[in-house]
Amino acid sequence: MIENLKKKVFHLFLGISLKRRLFITYLLLSSLILMLTSVFFYTASKKVLIKRAALSSQQQLSLITSNLGEKIDNISNYAITLSINSNIADVLKENPTVPENTLEHFLVNSELTDQAQRIIGLHKNIYAWDILDTENHWFHSSTTETDQLDSILGPEVLDSLQTNLAFQFLGPFQISGEPTFVALKSITNIDNTKYLGALVLLIRETNISSAFRDLPDSSSRDFYITDENGQILSSSSSGGIYKDFSSYTKISSENYKTLTETDRQFFSVDGTDTLFICKSYPDLNWNVINLIPLESLTLDHMVILHNILLISIVVFILSVFFSILCTGTVTAPIQKLVEKMKSASAGKLNISASYSSNDELAVLYNQFNLMMQKIQTLLNDIYEEQNAKQKMEVRLLQSQINPHFLYNTLNTIKSLIELDMNDTAVKAVSSMSSFYRNSLSKGQFIIPLRQELLLTEQYLYIQNLRYMDFVDYEITYEPSWEDHGAEIPKLTIQPVVENIFVHGLTSQICHIHLNVSIRNGTICISVSDNGSGIPPEKLAELNRSIRDFKTARHSFGLPSINHRIALLYGENYGLTIESSPEKGTTVTIVIPDKKI
Image (cartoon, rainbow, N blue to C red; front, side, top):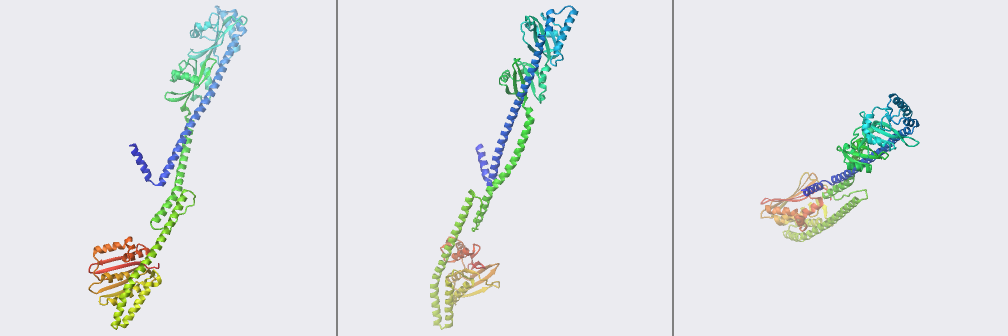
């Protein structure tokens, strides 16, 4: 079925004009190239936008990790400064445990607060702090949330502070309804590194996530901080904290692992293609992750798409214009040549086709002109050959007519002399002499019509002398007749008249009527008799043979006469025969009123 459809489309395509085929072909090729180019640029622009977004995200993540590093380092520096402060150490040396006496407790707290505030002051990242004694009791220096800290940190973390002297940054934990990070630093005696207590600093998650909020276009993008286990520690929207990143973003654990190893991946989130960019923060084994939905690139992409569509429309219009121009350039010369060929096929052979370019069509034009020249040459040769042949036929006809006619005429003149009809005999000799002089006509093939009529009249006069008891004749000219010097092939009318004497004589007197008329530039010469006529079947065959070129070529009678006239004047002129049995026959010769 598909093959049949292909064949139908192919035949339909071949059935339209060459101009339309070329136009459709050019247009399809242009459209295909335009479509492929548009798809290429669309895809390339998409890749460029993604690459640019990824590069921008990586730069932002670098800035975020740098800001995080500064924040954490700043907090660490404050913690270390407090832990090595000699005044705080002296207070803790004197009070290894929290005083039970309220006044003493107040005085110790006042001293610790005074010393710490001098260092921390109004630090924007640290919103609360406290100190543990050697038995993990709280001095309650600046926070009242120690009960939550006990349950959150637990004995293991608190006990480890006595041996783990390094700075620790933990969390976030839910403290007073808000996600909070906890910074820990042991306080030791500088002289003997004896454990004196521990410093605890509280930092709101919002202070950490503030690193995301100062970025351009951050409102349309999501940032997350995850720990080494994939738990969300902080986010730009404060959503998903404490949750597993894989579950929260609906990607698999394997995809999350791949992301942390490759730094960049495409995943689908709720049916939306999303670019995941990851940068590690090795100091705390954190990962900072940026999610960029491809839809967020739609604005820039739509601008590019709009420009591509606009350019495509312009290029398509130009393609249509140039397709029309190209097809016209190719088909116009071909159409011009086709029109020339149609003119040639209609009989207009004296034409040539001009073409100014020097391409393959120029070869076609030159070959056409060469062909027309050869055809014209051949036609001229054929015409000359036919003309020569007609002259030979006329001469042969003369050679056939003259001996018989001369013999019969001489016998007639002899009879006239024997009958003492000397005047008539003299006139017969004069007519015979004039007849032969006109029939020879100095070897000319074309003679004036008046000369052909005179020749025929002399022939009728001589034949009438021979058949005076059986034949009479009449030559008439209609009032419209004027001699304008029209010409006719020699021996055109005389053979028609001779046919009457050969085929038309009967036992009754034969009346021959030759009439000449002119209408609308056309001369009509009719030769009528009242003989026995021609049977319809034979008349039809005779008319058919007159118009048969092959018959005319091998005939010296009426077909030859008709053929000569048609060659000289065209197919609209020639000879016709009308006849009715027992009523007679009329032969009409039609020629133009002009010189040849």
